[in-house]
Amino acid sequence: MNNSMYDKKTKNYRCKNLCMSMFAASTMLLAACASTPPPTLALQAAEQAIANAEQARVADYASPELSEAREKMAAAKTAVHEENMQKAQRLAEQARVDAELALAKSGTGRANTVNDEMQKSTETIRQEMQRNTGARQ
Amino acid sequence: MNRFNGDLKKIGYKKPLAMAIASLLVVACSTAGKPDGSVEVRNKLTQLQANPDLASRAPVAIKDAEVAVRAAEETGVGSEESRHRVFMADHKVDIAEAQAKTRLLEDQRTILSQQRESSRLDSRTREADKAHGDAAAARTEAELAHLDTADARRDAASAQQQNEELQRQIAELNAKETERGLVVTLGDVLFDTDKSDLKGGATSNLGKLAAFLNKYPGRTVMIEGHTDSTGAEDYNQSLSQRRADSVKSYLVHQGVEASRFTTAGLGEGSPVASNDTQAGRQQNRRVEVIISK
Image (cartoon, rainbow over all chains, first blue to last red; front, side, top):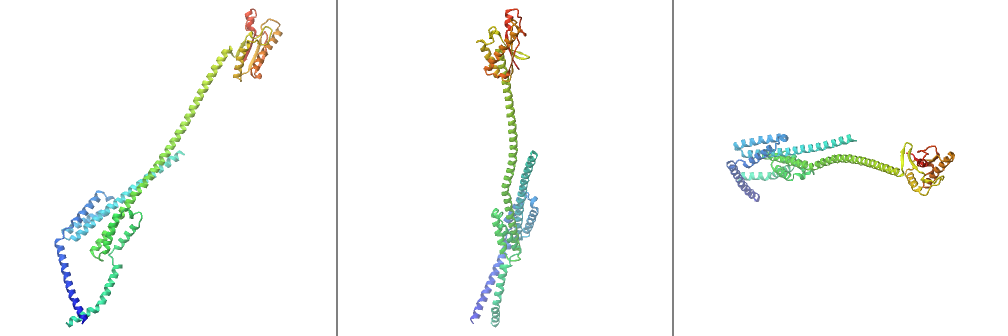
């Protein structure tokens, strides 16, 4: 008896809970579909990151990442047209990190080139000096 | 009601089973239930954080990556969102690593430029040392040359001075430079007639001669005595010899080495003037001191 009382209570509670959550989810989905604006901030940020990378002429060091960023940016814009804002948001975010990675990698590549040149010039000085001393002795 | 009860009973039986499944799921989630790729991304981040050269060089980017990795780990398996988050996390870790590497390279530049400077300095120091050495050598040479010149000049000057001195002394001695050497003619005023000892007044003239000979110790001296034609020839010869010896002994007494002297009594055979006149005979009575060149 005790047991059945408990079960009844549970059932009622479950039903209510399920109904409520379904309602909430549907309203949320509706609200999302109806009023989600395009991911303007993410798109702008991605645009800016790509511009920065292009300005830094990263193509020499990280062109695959930059092309990826451009492609995703285009896809994000398409998604906006298709009103798939979540997809647009993700593509924009990915385009941004692609561009940022391109910039970071090109920075490393450039720094590496500079260091190599410094090392080479030190080596040249050393060799020249050795040659001079060798010629003198 | 019955149906309801039956259903309820069924649910009651199934409860432990459901719980077991749920707990299995929970266990699964905590071990292998992470989104695809998130484990790899976490490993990559952990490696970056453990690298002492890189970890401290991009703290902000590493923190960003950490947040992104955690976000990726928290999403459900297989969803679009989880794939997105893993992608984001992976890229953020890569960005952090690239930034850290760039900073490391930039920091190494300080050492590189120090190395370059030191080798440049080394090379310049060596060049300077060489130049300095060359300059020092050149200076030494120049100084030596200068010294040589100075020496030569001094030598020349002193030679000239000596020569002048000699000339002056020669002039003072009334010496004549001839092929045989310097000839100093000591007139008969040195001796009384028929005497071979020196007169008192003669010594001042002979003193100059002694001083001169002492000054030029390399010169040998020939002393020749001469007479006029008055008297016997043999006597005159021996008188002239005695007079020459007398002059020699005076000079030796003045400190001139005796071995430098040669004396000769030439008598009346080598007159310098006529013996017919008094003045001529006076000129013929003489002692000639010939000093070698």
